[in-house]
Image (cartoon, rainbow, N blue to C red; front, side, top):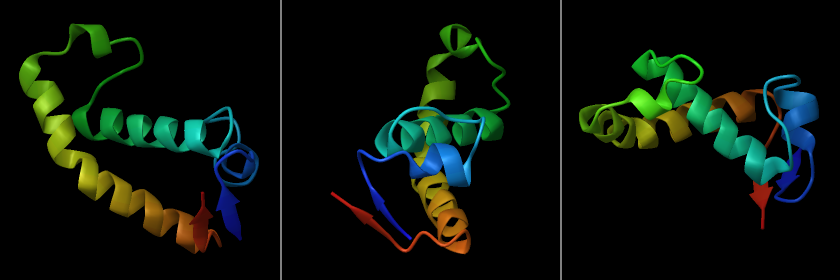
Length: 82
């Protein structure tokens, strides 16, 4: 499967009930969910984070994106189209 930015494949086939919107919006949500999970951030707590928490989230970004990409490929997503 190939992903087009404007389609809704992620919200219906990869993460039903977890994300909404087109593939771009859903991908951003998946990244944010994974960073929250790794940092132990619960829903609604982002406004209470310290600077160090944000810096740690930035450090995790490459690993999070790589991990999510691998999960998508296991689900059959081969390429992302612009």
